[in-house]
Image (cartoon, rainbow over all chains, first blue to last red; front, side):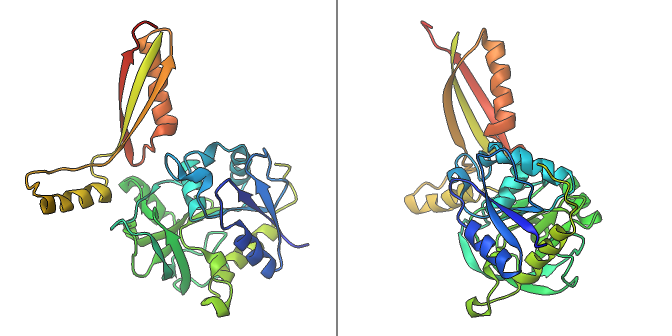
Length: 229
Length: 86
């Protein structure tokens, strides 16, 4: 049976359909999870997509973390279920406390929209199990607040526990330790600023997002049918 | 009692503030040569109904910690004034 991937839709999300398209391209089932529903409808994995949830008012993710669906997303994550936050979704997951640290405005105050190179630095996470460690992927970024920061203690913990999933080859935004993506201690929650769903077609410049999302689908399809969240 | 509240949210000491730095760099072009240490934050104003000032302050502090600031990168300072005639 195809893995069921739920894609959260907040008012202001704008990458949810791209994620669903990419999931279907890889043979998975994709469905929208409306932010106002208190459930993730029993899906095998959740993607919190990019955009400007609740207009990014106050701070990116600050209001989204109180959306009714988030309690179910947190419950899924705590039960070991795969949860991936892309771009604004990464900001939402840090605000929700599922991932440590915060995303600040880019160094140089530039909105960045281009394809960058990422080095895969951990294959423990649900997003990178099917990718070779050390390999370099070309994936687009599209953000103003993607400058990852955290306390020195948190950074040490992330490094020691192999939780830095992706690093920029050429740091575009000032992120500490070139961090482009991190995971939870269990590896089942991942946040990243680059958009793997926009790197799924050679015609559009890169297919390097496919092995990342393919890893997520593989992780989702081995999930026991236990969720009633 | 009704209290008027002003919360100033600012980046924590040591957190880079590219907006403040950009403003500071542009000031000499306007002839302001002696301005240093520009930091950009935000002001949030509201009113709160509480039994007394200590209760209002405790509630506002909780609100700041859980919602108005991201404690990883931001601090807040709170000013509370009783609204006269309330």
